[in-house]
Structures are given as structure tokens and as C-alpha cells.
Image 1 (cartoon, rainbow, N blue to C red):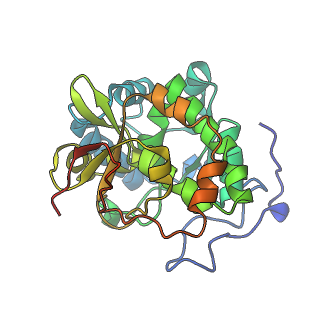
Image 2 (cartoon, helix red, strand yellow):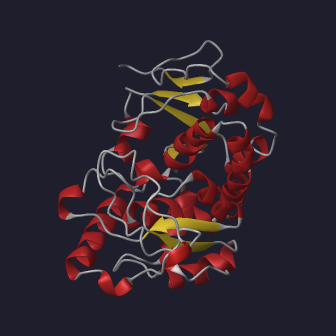
Length: 294
């Protein structure tokens, strides 16, 4: 991957003016595409121990709750004992799907994010959360990004869906529909459920990197669980600081890829200017798998 090496051409922290807290990433020393080298030497032994604790805690929760494809991908990566070196993981991903991981300071703007995905690069925050953030994190760190997202990048169908998602980004920007496309990422990539012969299973990074929401998303009677509907998702608000009120359920990763290969323009036009659907709402047109008990 060819990258600009001079920090002078790199943009400043893109979220400096609209965040309620200071982002901890170093936005002063990044390339023009928002990437940095993974500064592996900066990880402390306390951070390595924190990784091992989180990995053990989450991996124990996976059987019976996580999609088999996720579990298989995590096992291939073999990262239980230390914070992963991205170069090592990239060798595995290159053979499986041709994807690679690129380190970034933290959250990056839509345009560069879409471009990375479209070119089969996953932007991954390199820093490790603090000891007081084991159960809740304001912004994604290396554990959320790696443990939650990377295993499925070794699955060819899901990895191709992620590439397809990135390719659709410029059209969303053109129509001012980034918020709509972000809802698809949130409800599927972060909090998606899938039907299996053994029942519902989680595959979203948001719940699988969370101690409590892994179990809640699959077992709790409280949230709505609704069959996948692209336009419905594009128009549904989501929860950023609480468990989800609605989870969307796909039949297979192939279904996800096929449905999302269509032109989103009509959806963007119909949704323009409308208030998003409340996340607690169940519509008459929904395929209801579980009606929530709020």
C-alpha cells in the first residue's frame, strides 16, 4: 500500500470541534490518509495484561452466542496472549481474503474511512483502553476494533460485503446520506444477529466485544428482533450509550451481500429530510422475531 510519509500533509484531528471529550489518539503524526505505524513498543505490560484479561473474558462468552464464522476467524488469528501485531495478522488476512489492517489514531472522517474499506483496508485504532474502561468505552480502541471486527474479515463473503459497503460511501456523501449509511454499519457490522440451525447468533463487533451485550442481544426478551430490511435499517435511529432497543437479523452473510449490492439512491431520496424511526418502534411491515418488552 503506497502511503504519504510526511506528517506535514496530514490533516488535524477531524473531531476536535465536535466532541465532548478529548480524543486520545495522536492526530499530529499521521499520514494524509489518516494512517500511522502501529507503535508496538509503546504498549505497557499493564496494557498487555489488560488485553489478555479482556480476550479471556470475551472468548469464554462466545460459544452458544457468537456466529461460528466469527469464532473460526478468531481462532485463526491466535491472539490470546498479547496485543496483536498488525503485520502478523495481515499475513493471515492476505491469504484468506486479501484484506489488511491499517493503524489509525482513532475515529477518522467518513471519506477516508470509506476509501480504506473500498480498498480492502480496515482502519484500526492502535491504542489500548485504560483500567477504568473495561466495561464501557467512549471510542473504539484496539481491543474493540481487533477482537470485534477482524475475525470476520477472514470470511470471504463478509469481507466482500465490507468492501462493497466502502464502495457505496461516495454515493452516500453525494446525497448527504452519510447518517443513513452509518445506520447500516451500526445495525449490521456493530450489532448484527444471524439465524443459524442452532438459533440466533451474534456477529456484530459492538456486542461481541462487550461483556454484557453479547448475552443480552441473543437471550434477553427486552429488545425487538426484526428480520433484515435494508430500507428499514437505513431509516432507523440507534442507541449509542445503552443496549440496543432493536436488533436486525440476517438469514446468511450471502443474503447481506446480495441485498446490499443494489443501488441505494432511491432509499436516500425517500429518506431525505425525514425523522428517523424511533429504535423502540415495531412497524406493521416488520418481520418480527421477538417483540420487545420495554
